Image (tube, rainbow, N blue to C red):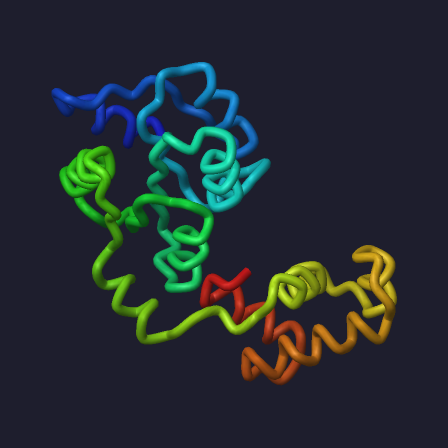
Amino acid sequence: MVREALAALLGLEDDIEVVAQVARGDEVLDAARATALDVALLDIEMPGMTGLDAAALLRRELPGLKVVILTTFGRPGYLRRAMESGADAFLVKDAPAAQLADALRRVLRGERVIDPTLAAAALAEGANPLTDRERAVLTASADGSTNAELARKLHLSHGTVRNYLSTAIQKTGARNRAEAVRIARDKGWL
């Protein structure tokens, strides 16, 4: 419903034409290849593949395509990950539709567009302290798996899993792995 409403609003702009809509992140690349897209507008939370992963895939496969992330998850960690994945813009959904249309135009002119409040928060917070492997182990632990189960699932030794979890807990300032997952998610690090 939100996707269709955004498409309708953007379609009212004289110089913007919505040429494709998909409901899943794993459909984005095929849609981009099948149409003459100039800009892909993605959400972070999409079934099949996150918008961040889809942005990175589009950057690799269609490097000339501009990518805009529009999300309700205005977290500094998500902003950093979006920029690292190759997004050209990062906006929150509570912005007015006219601001989104303006951002699309600016991105097409080669500008980077970032929600200013979120940019300030990202600078104040600093970088994600978790390594890729710590993020992977922490994410996998979110379902309550034991260290032994995580070791099997991730093809790591039990001690390695324990060490990654311990380091992630310490870096997040959490008391346990569940709290570390919550903190890391809240900050947009996972």
